[in-house]
Picture 1 (tube, rainbow, N blue to C red):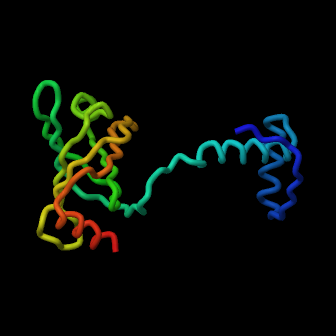
Picture 2 (cartoon, rainbow, N blue to C red; picture 1 turned 180 degrees about the vertical axis):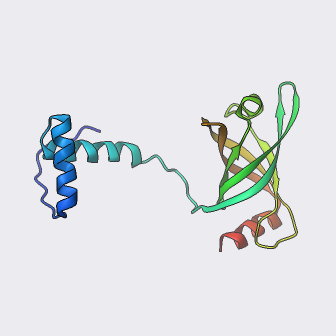
Length: 162
C-alpha cells in the first residue's frame, strides 16, 4: 500500500510517548513525522485484510486427537487446541518434525476428536481442512476450518462459545 503525504494529521499524546518517539527518530536519523508515518504504514500492512475469519474465537487449552491420512498410511497425533470458533480451530502440536510429514495444506482434510472443558461428557468430532500450517519454535501450528461434523458437535461448540 503506497501512502502519499498529502494530508496533515495532528494528535495529542503524553510526554513519555513524545520522548520515546523523539529517541527512536534520532536513532533512525529521521524526523518524528516520518517515523510515525512508517510505523502506521507497517501497522496497516500487517493488519489490513489478513484476518479472514467469520467467527469470533475463544481462547482455550483443550487436548485433541488428530487422525490424518498420509501417503504412507494413517497418522494419529496429539495436540492442543489453542482457540476454537464455530468455523474452525487453531491447534498446536509439540513434535513438528514428525507432524510436518502428516499435516500440510496439501492434505485435503483430517479428523479431530476432543472434549470441551465445560463439563460436557460427549466428545466433539469434526472433519477439518488445514488452512494454515506453520512451524513456530518447537511447535507446529495448524489453523483449520471445520468441513463436516455431526449436528450435536456443532451444538456443543456453540454452547461452549456462549
